[in-house]
Length: 488
Length: 119
Image 1 (cartoon, chains in turn purple, brown):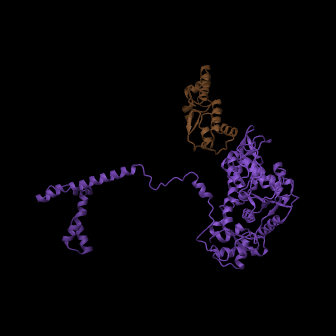
Image 2: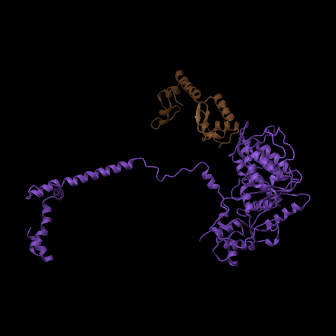
Image 3: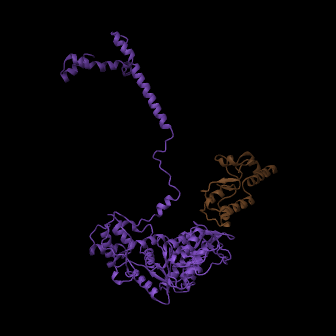
């Protein structure tokens, strides 16, 4: 058998017998002995070593790999132990401080240094806000007004202020109309007051209309009180308590009122020039208020002590209604929120408190409905929201009737709140629908965007027409989404 | 630290969670208690004035909570046991009381049902 295999191989490979014998041996050997012995043998010392020195080396040499092995084993073991230790804080990061995340969430960025500066951008002033020649133009908001608007929280986070070098606004038809009305109130002897609710679809610019109105009020040195988000008043996130000696019981929000007073003092520098005319009643305000202090000082006293914030707010409002005071603007965003039950609960029934039982809300609605008037004129403005609003059938009914749809009938299955309907029953409340902007206005806006570097496309008739149509007929929010924010 | 009914609590703690930490005060009782004192649901202990904290303590001390409530529970069970009722026996045996099957899954009963019930 052993001779047969080499013969076959010689025929195929044509090598010498010597080589073949060598190549043929291992497989034959492997057949006779198991492979295991071969694998295990090299580790052992050959007993028949001839050289003593070599033997010595060999005897000594296994210690080295053994040591190495031990070392390796040890290393592995120590490494493993290290891994099992509790990981250190590396990479874990610092926990955000209390309020830090909220501050980041609520942060409003009004300037972007990466945006191009628009050359020739005019600032809005008391003249241009009613000048029809500025129709369809974008005007910048002056820095001092920006600070005041920021103080009253007129800028909202989702609005795209952070895309531009500085805040600017489009002079649309509604803006100029309001500007003329503001001018009319300043000139008019009768001191008319505007009571208006802005409605319109989502992104149509209702909140921005409030911002524009407040800008104009600041330009004309009116006193502005703004409630930036009505939901804050009803969501049971701020302190509340009953006002003594009120039937039915009214509830005051001390901390919110104090913050509001602080905002009023910061955003209306004209209050420093107005003085308190009559001494305050000690039964209303438990601490003595020095006479002849400025109204700004009065507001800051109220803001520093929440316990007396509401009485001070009342005094401030009554002082602002005295003769030869500037007109007052009272704005509120998110009207539907104050037309329903709040999340607050009160004894003895332990039922939710109606929003109209809260003092600030009541004060606003009294002015809106006309129960309280503004002798010096002014504007009471409210805006509805379509992205965050509870379903209030009574408000929808009242607003649709005020818009002229007298044929709207009550839904037999809906629950109507007479208190809500009562706000609008007295009449005098206008409902203004903010719709889409015209194509000319849209073009002006897009050109401004192009000059700011946020719109890269060429602004021509076709592009404007396409985007205007895509945005549902010039709904500004949708237009911004289609032109600035959407990347295809 | 705010001291309520013999316990110190951190000022950053929610009032709602603090009240509910007492045995016998759940969400319903807590909501009523908060409304009675005009405390909003997201208030923290640090925002309460000292008078409100005293009011909370006085109201809680009038209520049957904590050890008083636990004692009442134990008394009820021991009464059932002394009367020789089926429910008392089942409590003593650590088995389900209200007719549940006992082939498997009686963990809650094993854990809770005993004459000297913890709570």
